[in-house]
Picture (spheres, rainbow, N blue to C red):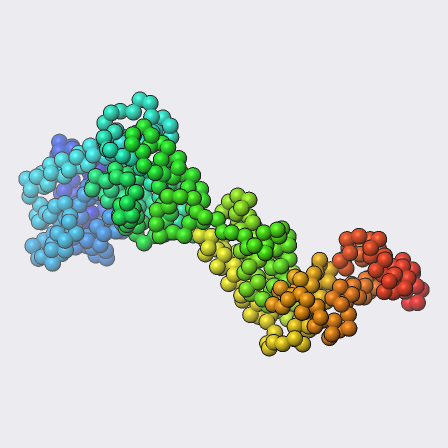
Length: 506
């Protein structure tokens, strides 16, 4: 029995329709009634009607508004019979434009109602038959692509000359919208199956199309992409094709190829159906021997020196390294977020004048996980770095300013593995030129100046009673013996003796 809902604000009409005919004799059953549109919507999910008989004029939401709302919310959508009086011509015209399934004038004529019911029952039966056949084909294809081709019914083979599987994944910036995916699938069925150009099937988490024609010609590929795009209703999506096969039994190979390509979807540029592995970003020639920690240090120094371009290079280098190692989408996002977050924290500590601004970028950094394309992710990261560089940039230029920048960088980062070459790159000068400039301005070579800064900080820590090995590590000397030698060279006594003498003089 097909369930019926009657919606009318007049109790006599509601009850009269219940008893005017023998509903079950015509294949229907009145499941529920509603006094207005809002009550009807509340009862909709429980009653699941296949036919709604709706008064066109009701207080609040009228019958046509209810019709539109139900069509947006319900799949499958029920059939509609509209009730109206003689004075409702404009309503009736709108109802016809909305393609309702029947129009009844009050008072209701019994024979007229029965004719409508017979026609609607026939239509529902045809839809059920078609849906059952479609489900059978879809189920057969799902078994085929999963490697269960044995025992497939003959009617599942459309008898085409070629077959090719295309997989589609609508992209979301949050949790997948199941209702949107369902709508997209229905639109794809309408587009491909009505034109007899393919059979649509579900292959979680993707939608699939088994195509009748090969996409070897650009025009064919463009047509398929356009059909998918229209079905996706302006929603961004990825699509991959597994290549043409000559026999239905080989469609599983096309499916597997499309699925393998889909695993790299994060690297796709979008705008077309992908038929080959995406080209990985290349590692710059001057960074092909760099490790991830070296590139992280380069990123930090670039930002501390307000060099946005160099920071972007470091980010691209890190991404290329991780991709070459086979990093997944989630591993890339986690890697970038973790590294840049650590860099921002370090900057916030060393640059108190910009601490609040740098820390404010953490929320923007956290949001990059929603990006659906690698290039867009990288662009967001580079944008964050550019904002940091803009805030930290010292106005002006010239040799004296560069030396001042070097001195500031050394004092802020003396515990790190600083190298003249890295600082020169961050500041945009050659290391030989900047080294001479630094020696001329300070009287010391770069390494000597760095040692003096470290030893001065070591003296301050020793005066606080810290252990020698702790001091060595915190000022940037991994080898304690080497620290001893450097300390004695610049202070004239051992770290232990200096700490003892400092304690006695207090």
